[in-house]
Amino acid sequence: MFSIWSISNRTNGIKGPWLPGFISLLFPEKCAFCRTLLLTRGEEIPVLCLACEKEIQWMVPPHCPRCGRPFPKGSTSHLCSDCLKQKLFFDWGRAVVLYQGVLAEAIRRFKYHGDISLAGPLGLFWNRMNLEDLSFEAILPVPLHPARLRERGFNQALLLGKILAKIHNKKVLPKALRRIRNTIPQVQLDHSERERNVRGAFAVREKQEILDKRLLLVDDVFTTGATVNECARVLKKSGAKEVFILTLARVGAA
Ligand SMILES: [Zn+2]
Ligand SMILES: [Zn+2]
Image 1: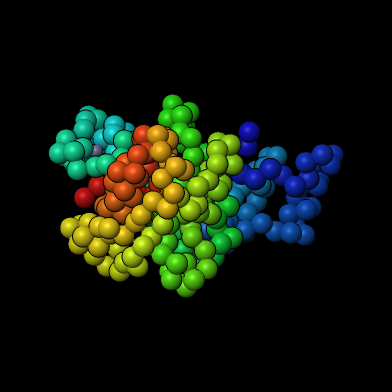
Image 2 (image 1 turned 120 degrees about the vertical axis):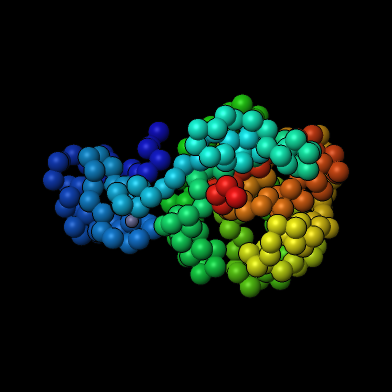
């Protein structure tokens, strides 16, 4: 098992202490986020430089045990107001890191500027999540509308979901859920507008695929949760047994 931050040294299997340095002189590795040159650390070539590593803020308790909403340091973990009011349709939600700084910049480059070389380094973050207790059966990426997909050329949630599926040896159901309405990008809207914007935007393509299944819905960023919650609503209505949400990043506590 490799460390979350490192790719295995390409010189694996070739003996000689001089090789890693020599190889990295010929093919210098750059930080996946800020592109500064990297130095090998022991047996491994890191993916991020130390400065970028330091900026990453892992999502840690205290948080809502059900939806993962972060609480200020020092408070105790308890159900959040959304979960108490039963406004959420998913059964469990978590994010790996806080959406800020170099990480947010990398996600924007990946998603809006088509830098798909970032999919691999971002996918390494999944290693940090222990999902064994969930016993989910399949991974569903949040779908893009076909028009948006044509424009962007890829679905970031699908690329990240495929990496997650490899780690956990699960299947991906990329077409089980489809986006039937091309909505305004959520980024321009406030909380209640987001809910209205995605209402009725998704449909289940083939009920049989999700019936009685425990599903893990994957996306890149959780902002207000309106999108994933609407997906969860539709999936539950169509007979999914449980819907779990996992996003790479989450916007900080409001
Ligand atoms: Zn860096
Ligand atoms: Zn909650």
